[in-house]
Length: 328
Ligand SMILES: [Zn+2]
Image (cartoon, rainbow, N blue to C red; front, side):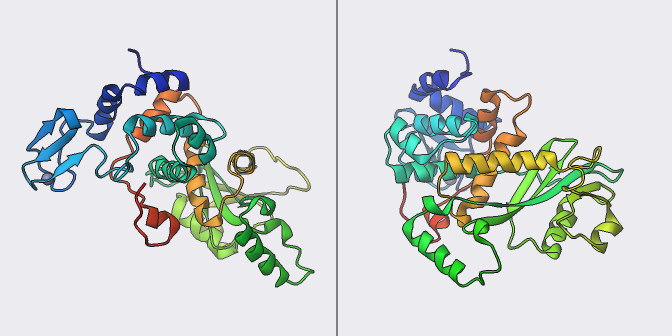
């Protein structure tokens, strides 16, 4: 059977448990050498009926899920793969309610599954953007988050309280429940890198640029952001005046603004109430699809996520900040 190219194909393909297992195995240990995730031993016996290995090194058993985002999950691999396919390839993302309805797990489990897959979607690229010979980088910030009316009651109350403590003349209502996000876009690789920042003060934004952009690059920002010497000394800095002319030749931040509008539309449509605490994870998801949108097939996007499941873990306690170790 050919590798799947559509969601329909993927469902049929991975519904065969042996096939799903063989497929995941190939990405878990790409060089074909199965090693125990606990002790690193290459000496073990495979128990075919249970699809687990008996390690001769540490005398313990391990499955394909150990040491991956799937660890401790009772959900079968075929379901995990279906959800991973949907999240990586559905243009607007997929909500925990849709997963709950389509694969028959509880909404809470679906929510946890989606967050674990987002963990595998995280980019592991650390290379700086731009280049020392004037590579172009856009820099911009935005306020992103759910609409207050869609939020959980307790959160709504908290925001109303915060707002009531702000003087009326400071009209910050439109930022309520939203988090400041800083983004960079590399014009050469066409990739975006964005994350939640504590504030949009000059020092904060400059620090992000300094640690993510190669010295000597051209950095384009809008005029609202006051950048000073730290940037001037290290970069060719140009600003866009949004009132006079939106686009001055090459100097614009439109690519990044495109990313912001896609992200905002998704968060308002598919994910109605994203807590600022989880926003970075949704950004990882958005960035994954955005950075893998051109010339990448659904099948390749899916493979990329499958190749990043190992060595990453996200426990329920990490996710909720509760410290309780409920497994799902
Ligand atoms: Zn072992």
